[in-house]
Length: 104
Image (tube, rainbow, N blue to C red; front, top):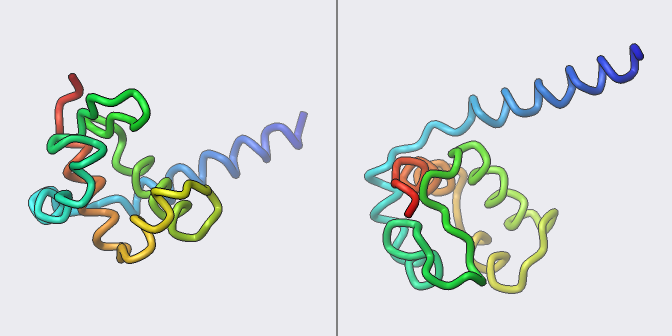
């Protein structure tokens, strides 16, 4: 039982840590999002079911996914190269932009 509580605490700490780092500039993210629009839509509402809608997603989640694509922890032949040149600030800004969009 104690191990379960410790694991829960560690998981919660990781989520809080990611959330604390996701404080981007939505306007800068919008300017950077042109490269994402072809697949995910200009406002993050993809019309193709192959590509996820990013609009309304939690910024911390989006930052984590971009970092995972960049590091190779999450593998995708399209997203790996797209995330590779992004700086941490780019990721936070993109996440802030998409988090601010309304899902449709």
